Image (cartoon, rainbow, N blue to C red; front, top):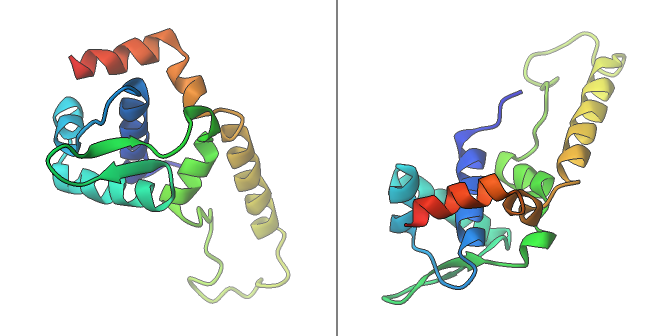
Length: 142
């Protein structure tokens, strides 16, 4: 299983904002630091704000800040918000003669739940609490 760039960029934005709690960071600043398209990041930031992970302020002195404390932003919740259903297999995609009589879908659902449960043991604060991660993000802000 591979997460999308959308989710990858979401974590980059959250870590950047979380590493700079004393100020508003800008979309242009984050895009430049990570060398990511500003337009693509705009979609990511919009979704993060919809989910309450970010708070945005428009205008000349606007920018982005975390929408809540980093310790309350669980990694699995961010993944789920950015990825959507995360279905491992779509049994309805093609007619399957085993629909309703197959244990594979249940196994995949349990595996997905275990994956998200494990990710939810970590928060954004945990990620930023790692000295290498925090210093790596802070180097980008210089």
